[in-house]
Image 1 (tube, rainbow over the protein chains, first blue to last red):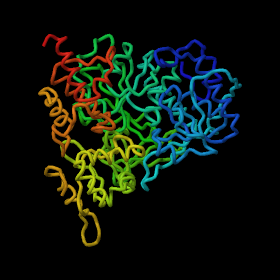
Image 2: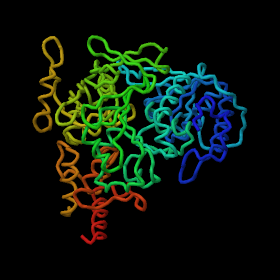
Image 3: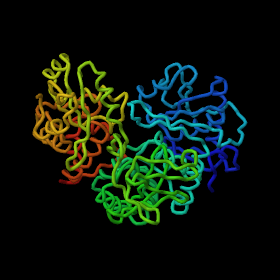
Image 4: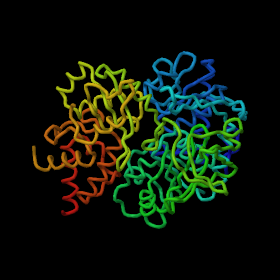
Length: 454
Length: 89
């Protein structure tokens, strides 16, 4: 039975209901309730009003999430738990709530599955329970996207309405993180509210996911994984996945067909953003299959084809303009035609090129950089780097390949894998014209031939 | 360097489109992921697919420690060799 997040801890859900499979054993709703009480009591002791929530385990995230709201804390949800990201947010008045021991230094409340301290839960007021999500911003700094619990509950009700029957009883496993809104809703909150078992880890490889998955499980994945399914035999008919969710970027038509052949259904592509939540979905029968808006979601376009959306979970319940250009049909469905600003999507992640260059330019061996998408058979994130004198020294010592990998490592505390350039060129000077404007055609040209120092 | 290790180094470079590096520059013992060669989780996915397609083996995570098998070129060579023996290849 579906219970909204705001009512979950005060509901009459049976204590024996399985919630998650954590390290081989089942956590019941009774465990979940007791662990949330313990965390809540520990937050209350600290007399704070804000926490940062970043965890490895989705189960730990869910206990921390409801405990913090019960303790009247505003929650910051960063897009990942990298040290450079957490440093933006964590401090004395805003500690880190996490299952990663030591990640918040002295400012941490550890989620360790302990039970003992008690707390009497109240029904949460969804309009007065506040969260801040973060996503790539145009200034190179993460951009804040505030939400209320009411928006989250409203969207979960819609998702339950659309997929609840198809998913009845299905266990959920995912290759995506719950720190992003898609993974959070589909891999964690929807199963939690519907009373279905979920696996709390983020599976990196298919073999591990399939070895863990009970028959008939739901997969929550992304184009990065669905384009890289190993040559498996198709799953037997009776063990097939009822629904495979994917989001974050366009799923190539061939990858959709490959997933259907091996796992059963055509993947359900969910289109949306952190700002708007889920907008529409499709199963790609053919490359021109349009996206159908979710129940209650209205769509419209302006003269350029820029999509605006409105539902009871978009911001302020008013029209919310996206960055996406679409071809819209009379019934409200649409086909994606492009993006309107400087953000790029790669491996399903929205990234800011300015942000990558900002971090790159902080390196001792970098004097200047240009990061962009190279459009060949596949789109690749690439970097052209003007090296500092110590950079040239290092290039001679280690070679171009290892220097690129060294720079990827330097970026990795701040940026996710998808935002780390895969191909590198090292130059004496970045190509600019007399006005100092970057010469994109010359930059592209650098990747036409083999690498090596220029 | 033994021939099979060289073959795997070539497969790694070809599969992942690594530029500016030759098979000879990869040490058989050096770690493939994170430090060492610096490959990431997407590389791991692609490498896993390529190895299964190239050598006709199945990677089964139930009883194997995959992270150890994928640690270096040498461990990968050992792993593929023993899997192929089991297949009777």
